Length: 380
Ligand SMILES: NC(=O)c1ccc[n+]([C@@H]2O[C@H](COP(=O)([O-])OP(=O)(O)OC[C@H]3O[C@@H](n4cnc5c(N)ncnc54)[C@H](OP(=O)(O)O)[C@@H]3O)[C@@H](O)[C@H]2O)c1
Image 1 (cartoon, rainbow, N blue to C red):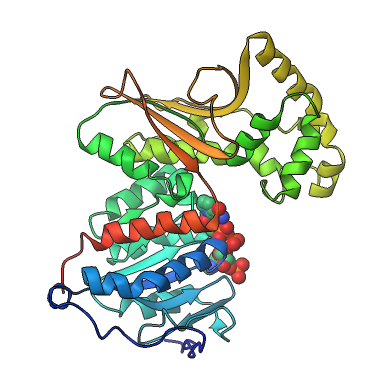
Image 2 (cartoon, protein in one colour; image 1 turned 180 degrees about the vertical axis):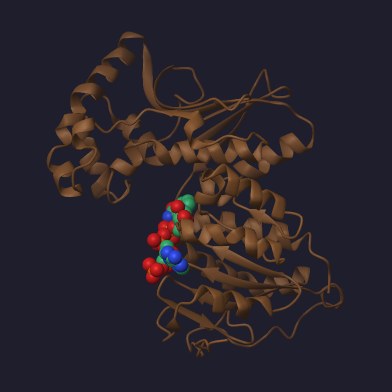
């Protein structure tokens, strides 16, 4: 096995272990060994939250979270004792090697978890193997949950050996996946899921009132960092389609992205051009968007970007005209709103609303998944 860089002490961070474990938590001590893949915006926010709560979780609940490794696409770091309070991205590190990293993590106790905070399909390919060897996976990465159905089904089967959770992949910290699981597990019957899954498109639709062109508004949204660096990623609707597929699969439906009909708001002439060319020709969006706004007005409604999937797994993503009294019409600027229509919640569908992106809230969704898994683990 190759040697791996150790975490040098980080003088700015707390380093003493807790002297204050309560008798109960000492008795019920549970160790979860963590490896983080991708300490980017979300991964770094998660590490901060873990650091801040590590002591409290150990003292109050006997849950000992220990960080044994961090890896990016280029570098990796590892340690033989907990490095949670020591690791920082300025540390030297060694060239990344996923196999060495995995072997290092494998020897780190009875309960090992890898947290994938990348958007990498290559990493998602490893989940099944890791799970078969007993390693739990938590991730905000959408690619396993919405990628090839065959891979997803193999991950599901590997669930006999280890757990997989992906709450943060759908609406960051909003408890959408867990709520759906609870509805189904308690015998409710899903009729449809409908919602505003893109904060960017929610903001654009909310502010698009005809007082300025859609392209001008899109420039503003980009300047405010509400869009992806290339706004076509938001406008394509594919991110929303992926979220629908994840939810449908969590509800037990065997569907793929091809089962979702997606309206791409990017005009064909701007689909393949460079980002710079797209920015200098964004006015090509204005005619179609102007027509849709006029239609909405003529019908006395508002324009919203909506994703919907029914109980048979037929999905649709695109612009809709909604009546003013519709729950999805009355949203605040960048919120996600997800509505579950089920047999029990038929008269008044259940709604979950709030910010659906941002490193802090996404990290909190990952943290909650981590704790859900920790709460099911056998005490050592
Ligand atoms: N940001 C949000 O608000 C939000 C909300 C919901 C879900 N998510 C999801 O959360 C994930 C992370 O988002 P982010 O905003 O934190 O992205 P980010 O800032 O770009 O960070 C991605 C991290 O992944 C690492 N990485 C990429 N490929 C890798 C590979 N093959 N092996 C190991 N590490 C690799 C990158 O390191 P190097 O570049 O150094 O390789 C970087 O540390 C994504 O799946 C995203 O869709 C994000």
